[in-house]
Image (cartoon, rainbow, N blue to C red; front, side, top):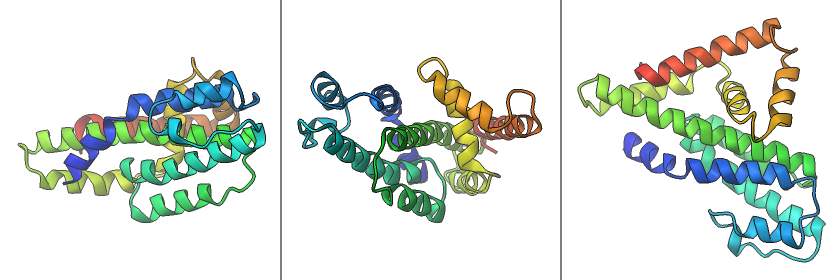
Length: 203
């Protein structure tokens, strides 16, 4: 069941990555007219949202949708029930959806889709390495969800992966760690390497 759910969740990764990068790019602009039309054309339920001619109202609509997505994505990224619930509650508690809040949430959701992709690959690797024993999926999930600073590490990996589409996000991430070569950057790079190795080997 863990493997099936992971495979299903991973099917929406590309669409979600594209959507969140597009939302980051549009967040500072007035979300009306052509910009609202762009949002409505994004896959994954944005077309049915009640877009209005008011930019402030549209930010609230978009922010609410992003918070709902955080709740769904957190479980797909293999964070563990408590961590996923805590993250979802934090995002849904946002009431003032400023452009910065929208960008921050879109980047978090994008990182969670990266986590979903990595978790899915890891689960499949674990099951294959164990001779297709499905019990290995549970063992992998336990190892994955207990990795040190899992969410910040996924945010780091995702920010660097999306540096071309979201250079400001990548720069902000690196700056928050004290810049390239800083002790915090090196420690995060090491955690990212361990997470990647866990994904590749499944154990």
